[in-house]
Length: 413
Image (tube, rainbow, N blue to C red):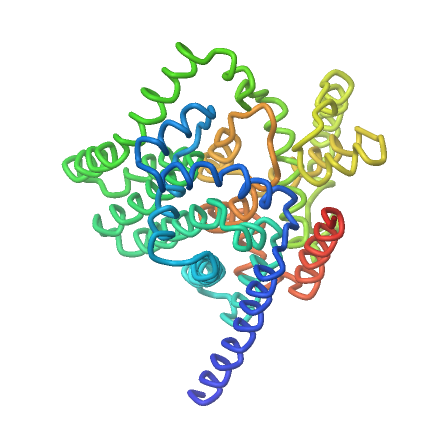
């Protein structure tokens, strides 16, 4: 038994190294399958150069450009460039990025104790099929580093659920705060963790954790709300109009539901029939919901933005049939309803409100959506399918690999 276990670990190591090598090759050739990573790298180069001159110069360039994200990533890159060349930094970032699938596997093992560990290992590798994950690794953008710390926070949160130790919760929140310093939208998940504080059942400990978190968040709040917003509102009104704020909540929800369908549908591939999804039992509910979505489709001008919206939105634009997007949102709503409960509602709300922007890009949700839904939700159909080993790994691999191939072909120039 021990020998077989050892052989499986060796086999898994070789498989993982194969995927890691593929990421190294992608970095070498500059994979840009997300469509925007290369441009992001070029645009943000000015901030790294600014911090190379001085910390004040870097901050000034950031504020004057109207950026609403944190500058800390570019400050760190500027520091590393003083001691290492671009090849070393790029290679190091690929290795750092490769820790995300490992953390996803750890999350899966902690969450689904009944499932076969080998199947969970293969399931964790779908991260390597994410165009956004691969492009971020190739072009050294902020996304993967923030995702890494977000995954660390989920892993530590699952440990807290098991042991109920205050120390683990503090570490969990620390990881989340670091993620928020890199990509500010992760800060919304603090609300989820804050609600879960009630499990500690000790007022003094809860108060200490809240004060600890606020202390770490203080520089974040000062920068974003004192410096950035004050500068934009009082001294740079013209530039503020070009910022991607002014969100449309209805559009945000529709895009979230559409992408929820896209990322979760392969998990249901063995379950897609009316009996197992129990559609017949809720037929009237779904028919009423469909009518509501159709009414929204007739009155909502979402098919007016040139950018963002996700894959189904882009397909709708390409084939000039906007109702496809609304149908995908409707079916995403059906799948979400199979996983909806009090705990999971908080997770979904955090994802929706994480992006208060006029234009929503799919890269914001990938791999955040999979990590948060699988790592933070409870019960529901998805959790049951994974825990009971009712997922079709071959189809899941084919599905996400096809997405990667199509993304590369779409953005190939």
